[in-house]
Every structure is written in structure tokens, then in C-alpha cells.
Length: 260
Image (cartoon, rainbow, N blue to C red; front, side, top):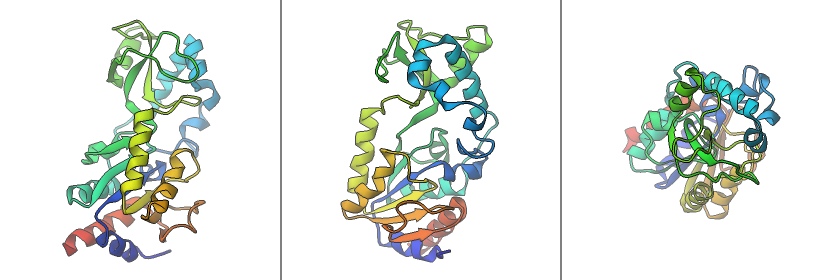
């Protein structure tokens, strides 16, 4: 294991840090990643929730609300890793966070600029009456996910948009769904701008998001990977730290802010 003192040194030399986070930063808050034992896809078949099937099947839509309720069960709180990244931004050294996660914990920790490349499970959105080719085509209606749960509990198992009557789904990117173009553009723009990227808790295997660290490196940034397991980009990184995100980031950021 590489000691996190090297991370503190790199942070001290950087003024435009960008965090890129995956499921590993939220497991410490009690949220299992999708594929680990106890994860969502051990209880549901992900193919059942592809965008096209959601559009075509009322039964799939009904089951999706049950899945979302399970995903959001309990009251997960931001952990030391989320809080450390928020403190880094508040200290004026960070451009913000690009996350693959859909749990909203970065915002809850106090991060202001959070680019949710796979959307958010905390909201729902209108996708239109019959969208095709994996592209939402809604009227712009969005609401907290509690809006949908309240309607399901009232007996409306397939709630529709109150504005246009279109289908409503979680504001996340489902399988076979096109990523939100503006979000992708913002994420890649930040990767090109940063001088240090912290890739935290990501397997770096899900594209196109996993390309972000390479974009940063090609644009001249240094790369730090904080992860429990090896990733495909370990040999490219300036520093690899094996350990829990909360402990590693919390220690490094506390040491950094104590230096300034």
C-alpha cells in the first residue's frame, strides 16, 4: 500500500483538482455497489430494466419503482470521503466532482459542483409518451422521487407526467439509454481543465465515463487512483493508493488544509 502522504504532496501542488468517483466511495456509507453481494443486480436482472423495455412494458415500469424504493431504503449519510472532497472544493482547490454514482451523497456532503454523469436516483423525469432509440423525449418535468412513490402508494402503479401525460422514470441513465449530452460535455470539459484528477472508488471499466482519467492525463494533469483493487489505469497513474476512500481522502485533505 502506498502511503497517502504522497497524495497530500500532490494536492498541495495542485489548484484545479477534479474528483472522479465511483461506487467504491459510497460503499462506506452502506450503499452496496450494483454487482457486489447484496447489490441491486443480485436481486434483479439488469436486462429487465433497459430503456426500451421500460418504455414498452407497464410491468417493467411497476417493478422499477419497487427496485428504486429498495435502492433508496434507509438513510445513507455522506462519509469521510464525500466530506473531504467537499472541503477541498470549499478550500478553493477543486473544480468539483464528476461522479458515476446516483445517490446524491456528494451534494449532501456540501459539494457545490457535482456532475452526475449517470443521472440521479433522487429525482424522476418525463421521458415522453413513446421515446425511441434510447433517447428521452419528455416535456422537461422533473420532481423528487418521492412524487412517484406517493402516487404508487396511492394505487397508481404507473404514474404519468402531470404536464403532458408522458412516461415518468427515474432521472438515471438506464441500460441502452443515451447519456445526457450536456452532462457528458461538462464532465469532459472539466477533465481537460484540471491539473490533478482523483479517481476514487471506480473500477474504471465503464465507458465512456472511464475515459475521463485518460482525457485528464492527455491534457497534462496528474492522476491519482484511490481504490481497493487494481484498475486498468494503474500503470498510467502518478500515484496509486490502496485503501478505503474515506480514510485516505480524509487523512490527506486534513493534512493539506493544515498546511495552508
